[in-house]
Image (cartoon, rainbow, N blue to C red; front, side, top):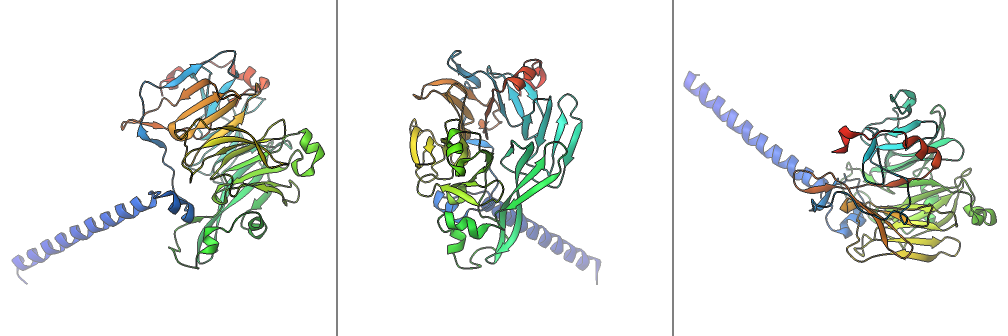
Amino acid sequence: MTMKYRTKRIVIFLLLGCVLAVVGVCIVIRMHGRSIDYGSDEIRLKRLKSLPYAFFTKDKADANKKGVTRYEKGRACEGYNRYHGRIYTMEGQLLYDSGASYLIPLKDETVILAYYDKPLIGRYRRGDNKPLWERNDFLMHHCITLSDRNTVLLITKETHRYRGRRVEWDVIVELSLDDGTLLSRWSTFDHRNTLKKFHDPHPLDIAPDGTENQEEPYDYYHLNWINVLPETKLGHDDYRFQKGHWLISLPHVNSIMILDRETKDVLWAWGPGEVEFQHTPEMMANGNLLIFDNGIQRKYSRVIELDPSRKEIKWNYCPGEEFYSKEWGAAERLPNGNTLITDSEKGRAVEVTHDGDVVWEYYCPYINRHGKRAKIYRMHRITDKNITRILSKLKLNKQAESG
């Protein structure tokens, strides 16, 4: 074989390799594009796949709207605002940055920290972040909350083969607040047959077996909230709403349920045909539930107050079709009777009165190089005097304040 012939073969192989590499890259890009393409709402509702969220707004942001744009002192509820592992003053100044995704400050100046991108949750001293305990065996999502039994509740996932494919099922884990010991574990997969009695048929159970890509994870319930019922008059009168029971949200079947804290039996359920992809149901002091109803099919969102015993809507905040957060959102009732609402997909939060007057408004100040504003997953107003007293002693974080 001559040198000229060998050189020619090498060149051909190199060209062929380049062509194959380009084709491979195109395939990967195309596949990746499919994996993050939400498509129509109808496809999103039918397939309910475990897709990554977009963390910036769809439209370009108004750069003039950053931080607090409205603050009516005397009408707004005083406190501190927490979101994305940070705590801000009512004026929008950054007070504390934990560096974590989720943050719960405690009364003894320790904090619970957790992350959505790595399996780590723990309790730490606030000053130096020295761990009192930590665990790296749970990759949590959406929510962590404290119970009245000195425990931490968090949501994680497990995967099982179901109807010919890999399916993700949510798990609620309960840990000791003192030392992080695992105390209980409740799986939606283990209790799926019971849960199905309280909601409409799931699209996956209607479709024939094996009709879609069997290796792509399928998120069955997408449990996005766990909360513990407080003490209320309604709870004294009706066992279903007794203090300590678990309140959960299953948006992929448009359902809200209350579970018995001991037996995990479903005591109460509501939602199908009423709410669409809801978030943050919370029982208030009057025994009613406050719910952020995303409205993924109607194309506008609302916040409703529901009487759970009669299943009647008692209050509704819906300023118009411009109020629409497709997949995120939150609402909480404040001590002064106002409601704090996270208009997540506009990177905005507002506090409104019972009559709908906006008395406080905030826009996330972080805008990327494409002019898109960072969304706010969920804002929480810290009003507990034992914690606000601690926070009032902190100095503003000047370095991180500029973002």
